[in-house]
Image (cartoon, rainbow, N blue to C red; front, top):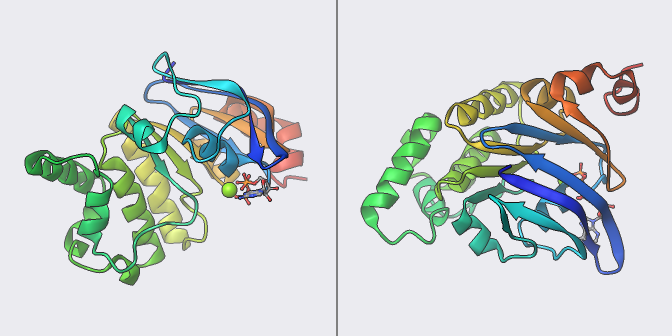
Length: 236
Ligand SMILES: Nc1ncnc2c1ncn2[C@@H]1O[C@H](COP(=O)(O)OP(=O)(O)OP(=O)(O)O)[C@@H](O)[C@H]1O
Ligand SMILES: [Mg+2]
């Protein structure tokens, strides 16, 4: 298993949000985490990325315990993270934003190679490289946020709500890119509001509610489950 999360508990101050969450991602797998607003999806990612410290449970990456390890060290170990909300640095250029994603890379040739790799997945960024990120469309900013996370050449990418707030055209682009990432043998843990589409695209999925995993299984099986449909997919 690439990522193994076992009975993770985490929250804010004294408020526990994640109440023993177990999640697994295999190499090259696309795994979706869906669930209602406030379920704890983003909190799970924050706990995995060392942005909040878990109170219990373990996280193992390639067999190595990484629970509570610092964010920059996790990135060096090969975990990329795209937070919710298309976070780019608006006054910096696209090119500068990308370089920030390879913050530990001092070698210019390797930096150029990383950028070329990212631009083969996101060719639409190529003729925007000199433009300020704040001037890009929402969809382009999401491509940039994803591209920046790929600059460190991760084996696992945590993607929090990549399609949220995008136009239908860009929602489709995001899901196409997910397939491209899979073709590059990258494992993705995906959080999505667009639960139906995310589960259709995923190898496996988890339904998180109130900080607990309620259902898990292959994406299509979850989609067809009457309970999941009634409770989480708005099917009546
Ligand atoms: N920084 C914070 N301090 C205190 N409570 C927080 C903080 N961030 C989130 N919460 C609370 O934790 C709970 C889970 O939030 P989280 O952002 O993980 O949910 P989510 O599943 O990602 O929801 P959404 O679909 O709205 O993004 C919510 O009740 C939220 O109010
Ligand atoms: Mg969230």
